[in-house]
Length: 290
Image 1: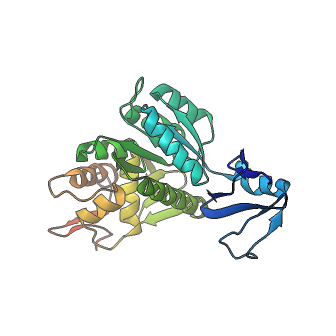
Image 2 (image 1 turned 90 degrees about the vertical axis):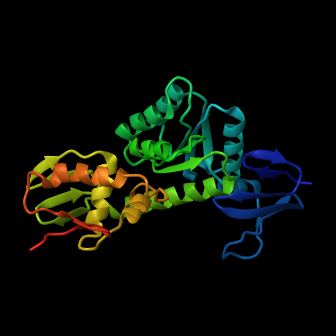
């Protein structure tokens, strides 16, 4: 019987594994390897070991995920699952180490716990976001209160998942982050949004009003971008909470009103015309009113 190569491990048994979200069944035939692929290619193909190495072990094109998690059992389970999904992984069990790895190495995504020894996940996220503004970060933590989620997203996380969790949901959220990142890479090169004398550069995250630079936090920028992209349309607090904060709307929270007020002070208070308007009982609209 020939040898089977699965994720770089040599085995003498037939195997089924996943590579880049493709389910691949491998069996041996006369010292060769038969690989039926569930993609539009001939149903079976006989290839030699060199081709298998090119297909399976071309790791330079695989996305790499850093897992920053102090619970070794959870970290290893996540790593094992992601390897089966065709990702490369690296694990850090402490905050400072996780931060340094994220800043030094070209990871494609970070999975980040909050309660970490050394440096907590909020600070790790803030440090990473300051240096790598487009690197996707998913916070994975036992802290499930609305205040915890808001703080995590405010510090720069792209998504927030509460433990205990189903790996299928984590995998789906990772895929969603990569879709958004790929779309961003394709569409935001020097994309500039304008309304009246307000200008937003999506790629550089710079905002100007009447040619005067305005400093916004990451969440303020995301809120303003959403309003500008929906200019002239009334958007509800529920829409903003779900689209900008990725939160299920809690009628008891005033986070949307607070950040609308922050934006008004920065982009409307000292300028004309006023752009952000309240529609009582409905939400907010960004437009130039005559």
